Image 1 (cartoon, one colour):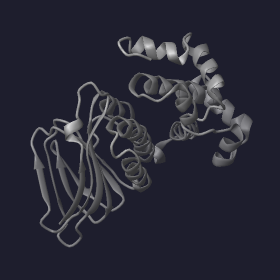
Image 2: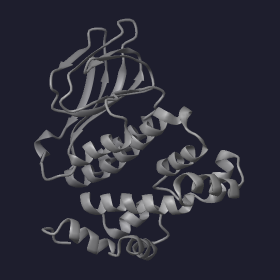
Image 3: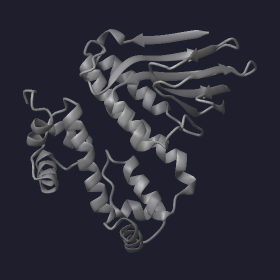
Length: 273
């Protein structure tokens, strides 16, 4: 077995909304075996190739290439490789209230295994962040928190994609692209329906236009960034693809009656803003 890992346990603090403890890659052999009872960790593992068996909380999964394992905190689990086809995987261990929020918000309860879920690009981004902030744990964690958020959205969309009706597909497309600019023309082209039809079916289901839903979700995510990261207001506006900081601040205040800075101060009264 070949294992590469970057360990950040020494920086762990319960004051952080999300902590990154270990990031690594493992090329398993036929003898690879892990067992934990009442695990202390939360981990996402992306299986690049190979196969194996995962037993977790009385459920059994036959893991495959291009799939994802979620190991939840306090779970009892064991997993091992197919002797003829050992796994290569990338993984991240993390913890905190924000991590628990991602799991609760985006995934069905007691779900641990997700097939046909490619996380390669996200782990590439994590590796770049590690290099860019090798001596700045707080900044590294803030950036990885954003990547993890996108990972959970990707997993959620992969998990249920085949069961979605058109309004649900549109909703999930918007969720998955929350950090981009999405137009009604793009939705029309993506789903092969007229703009008027897309607006109508979405509004009939959710009581608002796709544009309004998209804007409200952006503001919801902005609240998380303001409460749980050290990004500036301008950086958050850029991350969420607003035209500029002024437009972001104006839309935020329309929906919350507070400016982004006022909201951050309200959520973190003891911090100096």
